[in-house]
Length: 199
Image: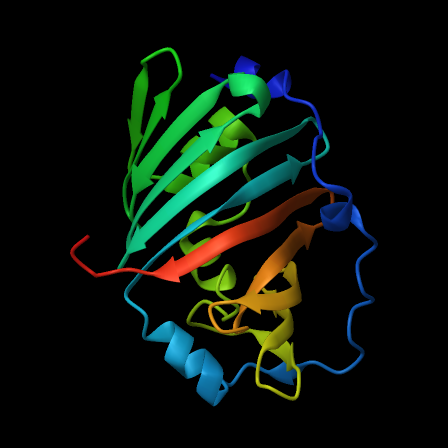
């Protein structure tokens, strides 16, 4: 499985590879704005976009389709020209990873499995919060714009930068960059929508 993604090229659109804004000098302790409180109450959503992962050892990019139902997630990754794919199904305590050759791996340590197989070092438990522009419950600092949208979040030594809030009535960011030292994920979201919790 890992070999598939080692072959993928860094094919992210130029807009997603622009220079990051500087870290804000003053970050406030994260208190959810009224908008963030509304977003936190959405129990189920899905998105379609592109993800690019880069760390000190490898880089790869893929199309992504993600469905979130409460704490359950289903993430489909498809590499450029169909070169490699993965189907990730899990929650905060367990995960399964189905590869393009039909092998399915299981673990009760989601982060460890994703890092070993995909080089994905970012905590999957936090990503479902970060992708909608809110910090994971717990200690965090953030910078908000005048509309109460997050422009920057720092949590668990990760920096999350948000740009182009133009989805879901201009409340969900379409470009997200998540970085820590030599690791980063860039997510370009083309479509984001709320769905029924039992869909």
